[in-house]
Image (cartoon, rainbow, N blue to C red; front, side, top):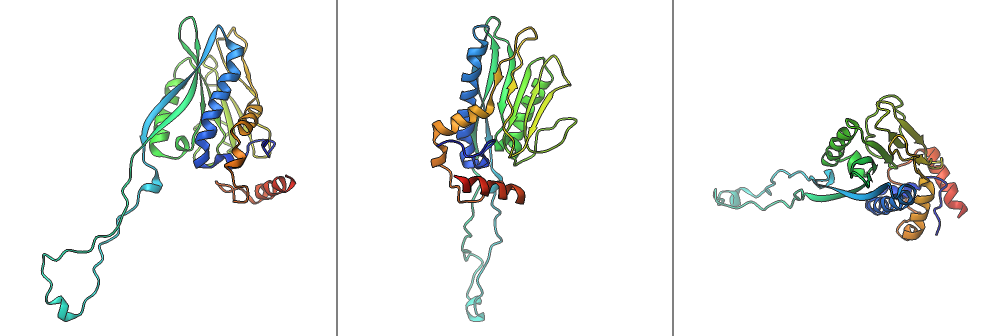
Length: 252
């Protein structure tokens, strides 16, 4: 089944589904770029691994409660009497694997561009954001170009100077043009814009039609079978966006 929406499908942003969207989109982008840059460059899929504890798993321990007893019973209690335990949960660290792309010179092995598709953990969890921001700062302080794709409305956007509008964003930061960069901002109703992937200055940039790739990923993965379109979108939409989504779904 084809993607129901002309731009980003907000139902794909659900945390329990996004990791599948993320992994498939990473592979699709790599497959799209490779024929355009080979043999001078190659595109490799790399991994970033860290431990994370989700906020939802941090459950506070309730105060110990002792049931009331009558005065006769209380006189028989001793200091060694055990108190009934309270059932609680403890946080369990989760190993997170996030994939990203590196465009490398086949002659020197030097990374000329890094392509990142942000995950909810990058924008929300403490460990996930710290891991990504640390790498981001290293890239922005080097001559390596960065393409940062943010198709998630939830969480705190990555810091930039200038236009602070929220929404979906694609940042293209060319290593030889910093601090200047190109920022594509688009909303739920807008088609996802295509963008160029920076290489060495003398080489033409391959173009990524992200809208077409997302639509193809949606169809190949049959994400329609994993989405319940009768449920509200998470993160929540504005009233205007809810009306628009309802209209789109009603047309299908």
